[in-house]
Image (tube, rainbow, N blue to C red; front, side, top):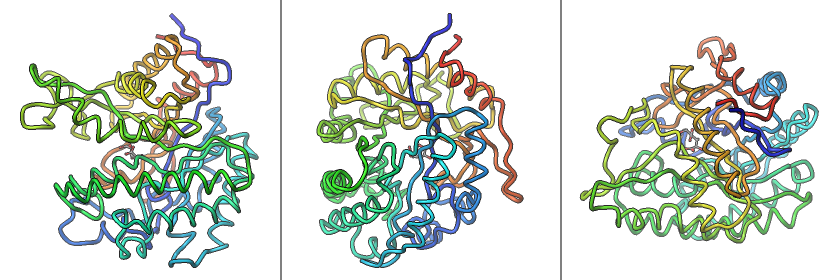
Length: 391
Ligand code: GCO
């Protein structure tokens, strides 16, 4: 049975500056990748050299028929030292916007995707109130130059991951583990930074929706522990979903399911397939997330990221088919979901996992930077072209 998506549904793919550009040596992540004792498997290095190769990468999007491209602008390039703004860096992103528009791709711009300039990190980072003010000033400068051509803006990508993995799990900078106080403070500062950035972007040129994207997922529990799901979801998701109520839209991002047991977060359920990322193969994650987000945020939604890190490209197609069927069900039930962005366009730098996790529709040869379009990309391109999913 073919399922039709609404007319004008926005089909895109997503990337993030640090994961694809290469040579982002002036941010906290580069420092983290090179610091002894971190869980990083390898440094980001040249990444996909997207900083220079974006025109050919955008050509691939055109060839596949996508309507939008989500990418992030790198704060450490635009403001390499506190209060010092680089016109050359802004020129670069300005050219990227033009290149999108020339190809009829709606530019979706993320202002913060996990990386902060080194000067921000050494000034205390996201547990310092002044970082929120610095981020607002950066947003103001960036939007003044770029706002007239932005199609949709995300202030933060997954602020809930920045805080959780940075202060509780220790796999992102600043590498703190179980720092409950730091975690709470980071959430507070990130929320404030979002509000200030939202205002700054709104006061600049251009008329486009502004919001944030959130890391969400499906939730499960061991028998008898179901009541504890709310406890976890409240801090990790609901806090930001409430914040998003004042925004123009919410970006929902989901990949898998989190399970709660007596001891807290527990691993995959025996019998459920486990992906290289260590979490469950769970294609209904997006559907569950949209339904939960809708209850609390009550704003229009875009799926700003969904995909799978796998070397089995047929599995990618199967995952996407099931995932998109779930998105279609939510739309059928009346939820206001306006688009879907595949994570990711390219196989890229998957943070602490390095280049071992491949989420791309397009493979990248690490030695030659040669791009190869995967069969799953052709499959998704057909969904985009027909605006219809064949299940
Ligand atoms: C995120 C980030 C991406 C990741 C992707 C795959 O959602 O964590 O936005 O940078 O690469 O999610 O794990």
